[in-house]
Image 1 (cartoon, rainbow, N blue to C red):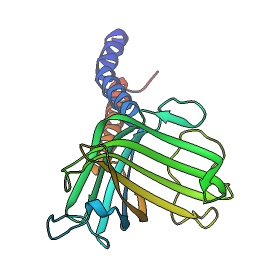
Image 2 (cartoon, rainbow, N blue to C red):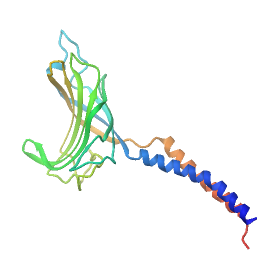
Image 3 (tube, one colour):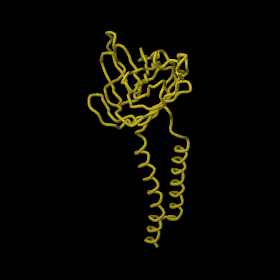
Length: 234
């Protein structure tokens, strides 16, 4: 009888173990992907991209900006440079949208680097190939963003890490910038630049969390049932 109970217990536990293995292996495969959404505004636009009587443009100063990016925080790298880390990106300027494209991309963590204008400090930078509809003969090909702190103190090291908070009081940023670069058939480059107003981590979907809670409850109920099947021990 004890052998039969042992086999029954094993038979009941195996599906729970299999489910847990699937859950944890799935989380391991996806937990490295982190997503951030942002809002901002447009500060400068190259003249070639602006509307004229001969050519309208969807781009202009003062348009609202929204977007998001996703990167794999388990990507390997050397010296604070993590090529291939970026997995997704969207940028919407008014009614115009550019998105992630296959090509070179990277997240870079820099300490005590040249920030321009004679300033030195820390920088979190993301750059990726981009695509989108042409604007007056210019097609987007690259998007980048950078978050700076003059004087440093933004990172403890150059390990791949999440972007710094825009609202931190202990290590406030001194400059933020995003840029979308365009190019025409002659190789001429034009840009749209702006700053950030918000940068927010996007949480896991509620469905993923509910699945995890439900599975844990299922395993717990199974364990309780097994204790009842075993009965009192002599």
